[in-house]
Length: 107
Image (cartoon, rainbow, N blue to C red; front, side, top):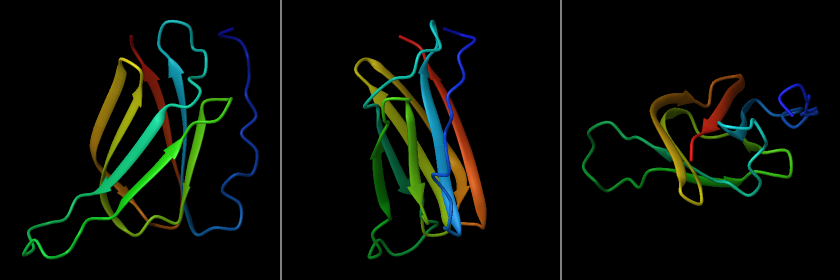
């Protein structure tokens, strides 16, 4: 299965900014279907009155997810699938182009 190729297609066509990711199992490289993706904007300082942007997505049958046109800023991204999880902070999103997020989750 490690030699398989998945075609992602034009999922980010026609948008200014896009997050495109693929979530796989680390031990088999198989796609993880219906993994939960959470993006939360990390606000700098502030008075606590502004709510951070929160976005979510699920992976499809190829383990792929997209988030189109996120508001500009620094984000925390968390990925969950059953007992597997990963988290990354400080991802800058919202600029022009596509941000690729390949994720391999260990059991």
